Length: 522
Ligand code: FAD
Ligand code: DLZ
Ligand code: SF4
Image (cartoon, rainbow, N blue to C red; front, side, top):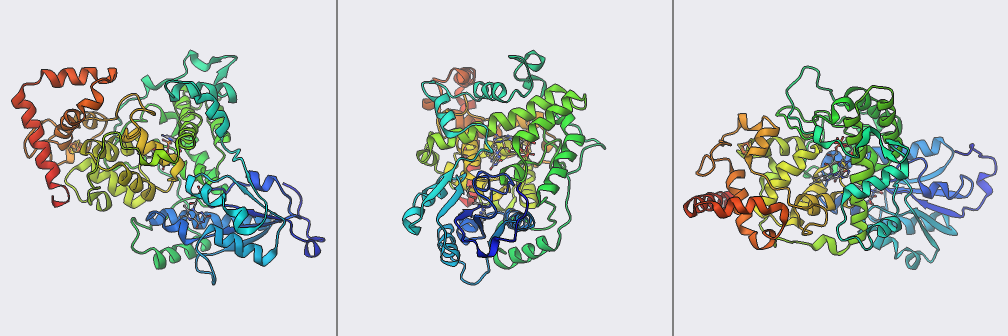
């Protein structure tokens, strides 16, 4: 960063208005790198449009606003001139465009600088800014990502299938992460086969890194109580990191305490253990407080130092330079049409219990209750509990998408939509996955201990006490036969279904029908 120079500041005309959005809280964001302290006025704004385009979890709003306020302070301390507009400030227009126009009225400017946004809808707004303001608007690439939109398009061009695994190998080669010359460290690109162990409750389970709210956060918490009282989720206890330094401490904590077991238990679920060996870093990476590549390099260092095994470190790095980059590529390649895809024509409304957690199904109750409490659930809960249920029950994928976008503190459409609509709901017909992530109760019983405390019996297949996932699974298979039968990865499933006696099939379908009719009191 450049040294702080104040002497010439007051008389110098401002030339650059730099708009930093709430998920651009990175000290080296491209919009800042394109200007200087002498030439720039920074704008940051809490706006109602962003705070309400879905009914965000209270913790998500509190996290973003507190992190934004802290980031503005750190920029000021570093010599930048910052206009920070609070949600309740007089005259707040409620929108990015409105706040940009007001800032230009206040200060004048020769040009607007902004880093490209994560979300399509914001990009659409940004494209109108030159007309709205009469100023040149430079939309700069977001170089916090390894793969630009152009690079992803080049990679995707002419490929029949856009498989993450091949994209990931490109990213390994590009970064040199876990590479030994041209070969992957340990002789394999992917160690997932070793990563499917069910977890056991342990005295040594890592605890999350919690940060006590400071006065800035306390003020934001009061604002959220006042303005977002009816939103989903518990505001307190609030434990998120809200500064770069605090997020870095959370990362150090993860690398020391949980990374070594991250691989082994990546797919495990345990009642009463909300976090297991996951990193809880997505909030910070997505908001910009942590640099993704630096985070991967630190994990790689832990492996090199012998502090974490290769299967754990490879698995962790794959999620970040593989999945995270890949879903962003897919989002920008396929939007805006992606949002409306609905391969199965699913149209059932989202059951109320997604907002309350009030259901007899212990696995769903646990995943949703912890989502309410923490604005967090780990990947397998999102994919194989709430996602799997919505898929089997034929819930409208857009309603499912809007739920995920609202309830998780790490949710921005660029990352949430491909994960939900694509990976979890197969609404894109198999662009992201080779087959739907659909599973009956057996899978949940194998990977978790939820079934022990459930009013349903996972071993019963049909009837009022049978685990609903069992009948819903076959109902899903039967209902979507015309769309899935041709998929080679579904061949065994359809051969089992075809061999099943008709009265057995009818029992499954009746049980599923009764259960579905009971959702939302149909
Ligand atoms: P860890 O398990 O510790 O993983 C490490 C890091 O890898 C994460 O912090 C994250 O940055 C990255 N990562 C892992 N899996 C993915 C993935 N599939 N896509 C992108 N990045 C990944 N992730 C989000 O960041 N925001 C979302 O809104 C989001 N919505 C999801 C919705 C559904 C239906 C599903 C199935 C997954 C979703 N994910 C989302 C991916 C994943 O569940 C979260 O990234 C992860 O649970 C965050 O917790 P963690 O930091 O403890 O992750
Ligand atoms: C998520 C969010 C919320 C809740 N509020 C704001 C806000 O008031 N101001 C802001 O700049 N950003 C906010 N964000 C993050 C934006 O929604 C995000 O920057 C865009 O969706 C682009 O990805
Ligand atoms: Fe979930 Fe079925 Fe197990 Fe109950 S029995 S916890 S509904 S998988």
